[in-house]
Structures are given as C-alpha cells and as structure tokens.
Length: 358
Image 1: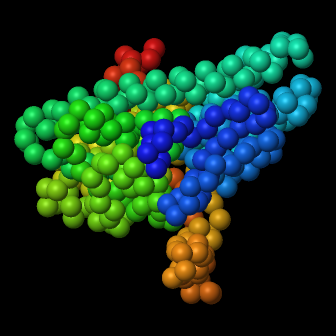
Image 2: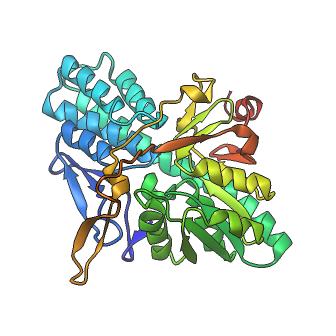
C-alpha cells in the first residue's frame, strides 16, 4: 500500500547489505522512518518495542530474525537459542511461534552451505503467503460490505479497533483489506477509527494509512462506539486478532471485548478478520491464552508535536498514581458474527473453522 504516494511493504530484505528493512511504526504519524535490522537482537528488540507490531508482521519479522541469526552465526546452538528468544519476545500473538516453528522445521538438517538460502527463501515465502492471504481476506469480506451497501444504498459505516491494517501485516491488512477492496470498487465506505489507547494505534496507524489510501475515516474516543451503534451509525464492525482459538474465541487489542458487547446488544454485525496462521489449534480454554502486560508508562505518558513541531513525550497522570497496562482481551465466539479468513467466511466455532481448514 502507499505512503506519500509510493508503494511500500512493511518489511523486506536488502540483498546487497544482507540486512532487513522495516518501517518503524513507533514514529507514526509524525515521522516516516525506515530502519535497518542487522542482527537477530535487532529483530527481537523491534518486536518488543513495537517498532513492528501486528500478529502477521511480527511473525514475518521473527522469520527474518532467524535469517539474520544465520548470517551472524550459523551454528545450531545459536540458532536454537535465537528461536527461543524470538518466541518469548511477545507472548500473545500466535503467529510469532508459528513462523519460528515453521522456519526451524525447514532448517532442520540443512548444511552450513545451504542454510542461509533456505532460511531466506522461507522467510520470503512467509511474507508472500501473507500478502495473498490478506488479499483473499479482503475479497471474502468485500462480499459482506457489498451486501450491506446493496440493501442500504448509502455509505457503509464500519467501526474498527486498533490497527489491523496493512501496517500490521505485509500488505493489505486483515480488517482493512475488505475496506480497501470496497473502496477500490467504488463502494462508498466510511470508517469509525477507535483511538485505541494506550498506544493510540487506531489514531496513529489506522487513520494514517486510510488517509494515504483516501478512505474517509473519523477518529473517535474508545468509548464512543456504543452510542454510535445505538444511533444506528455503525453498519458493521471488523477487527483483527492476535490469536484465534479453534473454538472461535479471539484475543485482540484491549477494548475489543467491550466493542463486541456493544455490537451484540445493538444487533450490529461483529466480524473478525484473520489469516489461518493466527489460529491456535491447541488451546481450548480462552482463559489459558497468555495475556501480555506491558510497561505502565505507555498509559501514563503520551507523545505529540509541540509548538515547534518537535515530538515530545509528556506525563498525563498524577505522579503518585499507578497504572495497569494489559495489552489484550478475549472476545468469546458467541459475540462474533463470523470469521473472515483467506478461505472464506465461517461461523466462529470449531465446526465452522474445521469446514474451512481441516
């Protein structure tokens, strides 16, 4: 997708200098910075600090992290230790472990002369696969938007939470892919963008990328969605997910659960868009999903531009106040209208997912 009129992907490998390039997402919306990752430690740090974020993208970054590890030291002990550290860098998104496990399986038994090429090809394949999956998610979700438009004959108002856009993937996005496809087809859409505290990923990332693609959108405070639904100003919700259980329960950015409750109470369709790499077929009880707790400073401080256009971080809480910063919550399947995947739309249930993937 585009930034400043130029097509980009969120991550790519530079053959000449044997390094990985990423778009540093902690700098949006006020700065656009491309950063070099030269070591596996750089990749781990980029994931931890959320210079890259979004389940599919951190999976791809971990895959390229292993490529960088091999460039540093292709001994199996170093590679194994690097894989374990990558997996532990963020606990909730299942794509991270999925990508590392897939890479390690591919590299098993490879000799030192061929291991780098094998790793690089597999990391590239993971990225290309994600692009195709996200494009297909968009085409499948487009049918839902088209159906609403054909009934309404007016702008389709879509509410989304956090950033499940192309910046969270390699291209297209998950929740935004149906929106981009609808926009490109000429269907009038408007997106209600939840600010998404504490990191403001809706305001800073989703609105930013929608603006770049000229998709009409409005940033709202996180608690505004309910009243908009009561007023009939939301036709559907589409969110992403960092981990989807085989039961249809979904872990996503904190606040998603409350949106689902509001949608359920107001008969607003609530869809979750995801590639199959986000499905966890092992955990059955949503209470067993590891929920990441991040630094409370993400809550107590905010960044913005001062009067001189310099980015400044400021304290917004009383100095003596403590804060709790859970990054994700879980929305149970009973509140989800359907799952939009690369293979089609299905019911949020074991039966629904098995029809598509088993």
